[in-house]
Length: 529
Ligand code: CLF
Ligand code: SF4
Image (cartoon, rainbow, N blue to C red; front, side, top):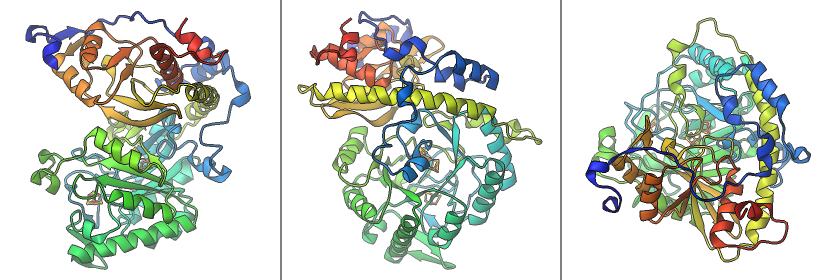
């Protein structure tokens, strides 16, 4: 593939950014767009309010409505609408932070090395700064004062939050007393969960993630070498049976109490990949709200059993094939970023290093101004985004000739096509079919353009990561990467820069397939203008 593109002598490229020949489409919203990106930068609350007052959404009638609201009860919607992991739509706008207060764990997973964080809810190979509950609450106040998108505090290790319960509970109690509107969220392997379900309910924790990799203990023996339960170490089938029973009990208890449960499953090719179809069915029966299939990350350098024995993780298209198979079962989460146990920011962005304890003043207090102003702006933007998506949905239903098109989008968040191709560290992937445009996942890449230059080798990696993708939409792309993508059979355009993602995709489809839409179609009109 690379032979088609550049000679070795040419492999350091200037990232010249040219607008391609296609017409630039503007969404109806562009005229008075409030940039959420601008609000994410470190600005004062006054500046935010000025921005808010100087613009607004053009579809105020639909403000407050949102995709998903219609399919969920009001009670559930209230719980998920600002949670970036439980609502795909919310993940464009809201951020989570994790505090690494719970280092102890009561099981061993073959994909985990205790030197690193719990890889059930964070990627292996990185280690978090471990905090006491008192340090953690200071850090939460610092982040909540500075990061306006912050809506959820999660405890995801670095060990197991329920096994290390004393620290988990102390942290949540301290935070709830200081910042009551932050949602509390925890992640667990489930073994110690049943002992704490009543306290979880009393503490107003609405979201619990449990990692369930099997519902057949025989499969479990390939994943868990041992567990520690009732002061005893259990191995083999006994260990997996106990873990399975405790997980099912915990799931039922949470569902009975209307606590939303997200099940995470690590997809391990040849071990539990096919079995996850059964897992999906069983957790649905028992009341799970979401199922998140996470690809195994396996590398000998991480020193895990799987890493050292050469167990591979799934390829992006294998993950997609499994997710597609599960589309009738428990609702799937497809936007997980396998974040760190001390992650801070929007999913996919990592601001953790800005908030290590040496950056947090001792006498910190919480200032809600930025979060309040941001939430007001988001309410407006969201209404407009939802209205656009609904319009696009109607448009797409007329595109009968299109079976399935995979579109990779470079975005910095806010639901818009707003990132340069060369600056992307991940692409969000959407699938367009006559049924609509659906977010189906993301592809992590190494940033191609650093300091104005791009390496061919890096571009090769980006192209490989975009396997199966038909077109890339971004806010800018140079001719060199565009030509290289084209040689690999992937189109790329910056013609829909700053449009809503779904509107840009629909406009590209209309332009590409020469579709004649019903009269009055704004999207098709934009594309052919
Ligand atoms: Fe954290 Fe997990 Fe809560 Fe989210 S993460 S404890 S539910 S607030 Fe989210 Fe990160 Fe994926 Fe987890 S993207 S790894 S699913
Ligand atoms: Fe590691 Fe998490 Fe498994 Fe414990 S539950 S062994 S910390 S991956």
